[in-house]
Image (cartoon, rainbow, N blue to C red):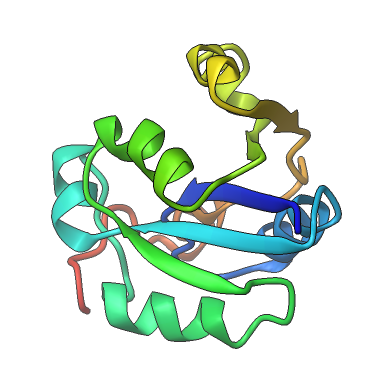
Length: 135
């Protein structure tokens, strides 16, 4: 079985998220999504509309996703790859080159994003700006 892992916040779930999850799943047989926790998002300067638990439930309902694990810090990627015996790391191409150091452990693929949609764009267009975590 070929395992794939991706990382993200997945707040205000939209069709761009679904596209990247579908394309990530196409890289193997089993897709693991490491979902940024509320605490880690705060470290990154991000605020989410939905809580970690709400975002996790949404991801678990998507047929392309086999397992959701918490992303607690930047440094956990190598450990996740080893622990879950990951074959391929997938992330959006806005991170191009940033995770090349993982090539020592698995294949690294940067997928093109859906250009016309993003959570940031949705928040801006709705005038939400930085929304408080958990509403």
